[in-house]
Image (cartoon, rainbow, N blue to C red; front, side, top):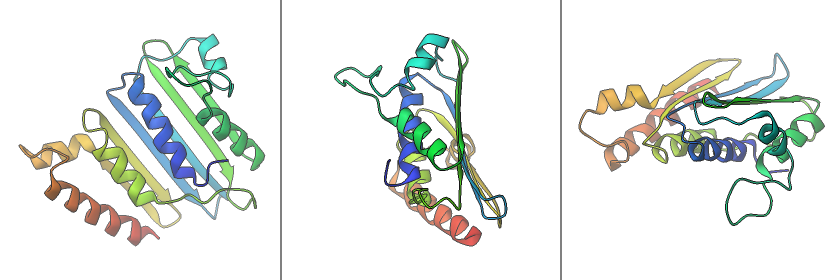
Length: 180
């Protein structure tokens, strides 16, 4: 198992980037009322055929050059199932991929979610060539941030400009803290 669930988000986003995605939607939901944690990532990348979709769920298969194993998806799947949850992965060639993992929040083996604020900031700033829409939801409310909207607001500044990063860090921190 990965130490924190947020690591899975970063890993899958990188898979989406490798699949030439231009738009990625990330949803992270944690609910005590519903006793669940949901991670859902959808992209518009090149997608996979049925055979490749089956293979990527096998730890001894990878599409990454220089690697002999691909553990990200198989570990996420096994962790979700082990924690009384579920795992779903859908993909269509030329249309993209959807990865969804649900965990029973009260299960003793569920890894901690991790640093949500850092994961959001890293996803936004580290993939500036892609539109990323992130929604974080808990029992107290919903926070959504979109790089498309950010880029419209900052005009000529680049999303990796130190002032923009500072603003984003403070904004994300404030919004997530208010929900917790």
